[in-house]
Length: 447
Image (cartoon, rainbow, N blue to C red; front, top):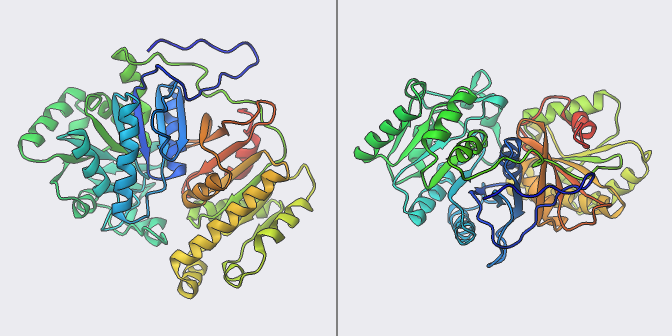
């Protein structure tokens, strides 16, 4: 694929769904923030990337090097996740992708029933793949894998805040054991000391694992160099499964094979305008710290009470009136984020699924109302919340901009006039430092 012509000076080149273009990489992401996460890594390395919300209509082709299909399958029943993922795969195959990438969270969010294992095995069967890796490592965000065990910073996954996740509590850091419980295929390990020997050694080990009847292997990775080795060693596999970190090494490998010409303008977006707003549904430790820092700075913040939602009170309408009463140049935060003990009390009273659905629906209504009031910059914290907001805003395609922090880029909704852009930052609950909210708004123009 040749390098696309650049837009005229001062005009952002738009990536559109078009004809006669073969993509290099097709990505199936199991939630919306995960989709922007992996797209950000590809754009960072000069890969023209389009993110679409849900499976596009049949027959639609894409003018980009990579297409990321954002699904909402992380916590649905495994059979539903498999069905939706296979539908995404069929579209990507029809669009001519060279390689498929199943993207899940860097904390391997799943349960004993799935959905990572069942989706991986279904994709392997559909692609005729006899081997793939599982590598959620994202060292830039403190997610590393050593001897098959996932670490979050200096803690094992099972000792981190993920052990209290309301939907996918992660109480075992041994990913070989976690994945094997979800799979019928045998699961093995690609150890760090082998990966340190380089791509050729990894390929030899993969051949040995295949001969031994192992078709899935958790791959250690403690830094970006390990991920680059894995990207090189596995570039010819039909399927990769990983967090977003592995994507960082793929564009260089594709360029070496002549499949890609990196584009220096891949992350360009139209200029943002307006004060912006922040919506937080995640109850992760990171988002709790971000909400607290915002409040400590004396900035306007309004809490959403799930119990009031359950009583049928007009919480969304009240929040919109509150937001409109704030100074026009002041960004506002509307949040349902709460400490673990408070969250557990609400879930015990309302039920975890009902409490989550009430909050997601409310924040989605608020997002739709804020945009109707003229807001054009929106930061959303939490994967489930981001999915609900994007669907409520009827956004079907996103251009990916520069990263605010590792794994979180600004994006721009396609299909709007160039002089009235809508910018969205969709953040995984676990990502970003304490000052993320202020940093995101400061960097809305890519500064």
